[in-house]
Length: 85
Image (cartoon, rainbow, N blue to C red; front, side):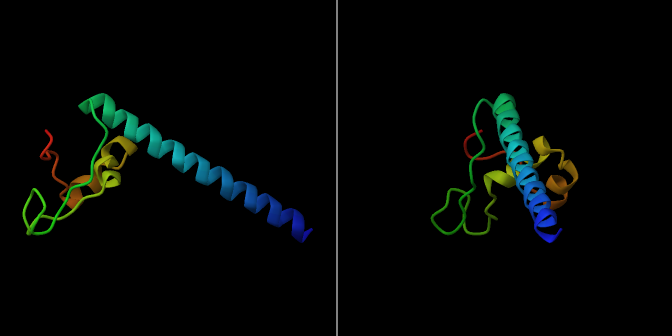
């Protein structure tokens, strides 16, 4: 019985991972449809384009509104505009 339960859990974990990857890909493509480009990372630090006081944001943070995470996006204060817009 135990090996069967472990196999079912492993399958469920694999399916959940595949679903999450699909959602990330869909959000990135929806971002692309809205902005005609894929999301980029923000560079910070003294040599970054935004200066040393600017937070760095991952491209994953930029796709939050397209992954049904608008509230988290707004709560984090992620800037909508970047150097490339």
